Image 1: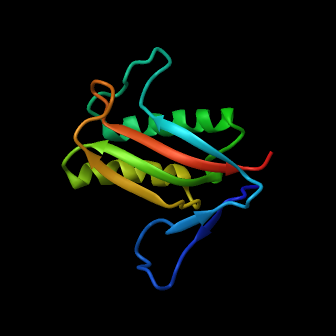
Image 2: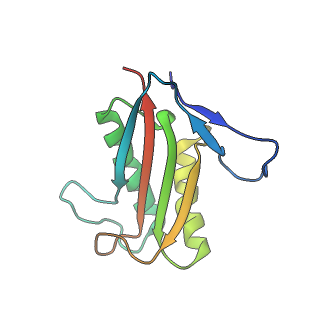
Length: 134
């Protein structure tokens, strides 16, 4: 069972598709994840030019890293989604993939358009912080 509590406020817009804050109890262990990239096992960027496909692989890689730390998507406190674009529809494309993966666990998230990401042909990266009890 997740130790993460998602926080909402009636004093903030209800249209945001995520909680505005989250907390974890003092006895939880925080898990800081490196940005999940759309890399295959060989370290190659996959789905060049396809934001949705890259976002899906980022989520798969994020889930693998979470599992290695004894966590899952329901344990995520917050995310940051980075998309190499200047077009808002591209941001929405990546967001929709991430949102669908998290389902009802609508952790606080920040969605950013950036000029470039670390690997050639990389369009998406997903960062996360999680909390678990041992």
